[in-house]
Image 1 (cartoon, helix red, strand yellow):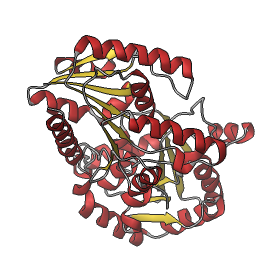
Image 2 (cartoon, one colour):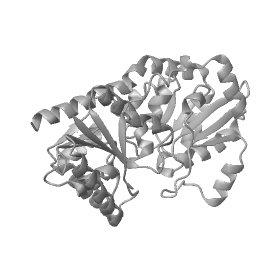
Image 3 (spheres, one colour):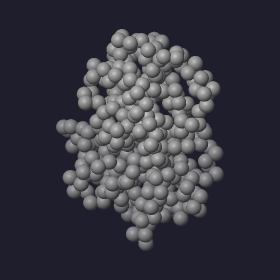
Image 4 (cartoon, helix red, strand yellow):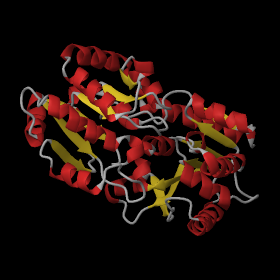
Length: 379
């Protein structure tokens, strides 16, 4: 059994690593097509997964997608896989362009549709692109009821709603019991946390639609009212998406000693071990892995009542869903939660009781079942 997994970037592979390794352990020949210049820390995976380089474009540049499609078509024709397993919207569009009549079955999993959250002419274009990509697949999997309903309304018949919470997360890694008091002390000293500080953490690209600018501005307002809060930011600016801060605000952000700027880090679990609240007011997510990681560590979250976010916090049982997406309202919620250790404790305890639902193993089992089912249909 030979499977070709397609993802747009090597960074995305982190969510699919367990899936690929599990398929390899079953004796399947696993191939992964993605963009990379160097495998880096994933070089060890080459013993189980054969990597193939494709320069996937970011955005909707037709020529770049056509070039990536040609490369993908060549890989499929050379490998002759039994199934092509595609993840993320950008890869879905490229695969739809590349697919030929001679191809094996194609499964596409989209973490979050774009068109339902757009408007006007952009919504029309995105709907056409995403529906066309769906119809070019044998099975089109979405992760939330919102996306399933949106696709059903377009008349697409091959759309499946995946059970569970998207990719889930690595519960062994995001386990608060892994970190000793001495390890937490080292991290606490690194970020300059004093005994009474409440640590608020933002995890994600520093872009406006994820709420980065709201978090920074709300933190400044909250800090003006109480000086026992500290903000930790894990992520980097994205040249394709605005941060929401103007030049003066970016300069202030970079100079602010009360904001710990970690950039991109693969040690999010370590920083979560000393975090009191994760703040992530995103208006456009699929099923956000960063929130599942925080909750699995027993860290309550503040997020938006938006697709994916509301599901992960179990409708507000595991965190605070913002009634308004404004700086002043977010600052007030930050202050309230920072000032109530009891509320943070209750939400954290509820999250720990719920954490098994976020296991990535659920995704692995569910997705392998979907692949096996599609193969049986195409026999």
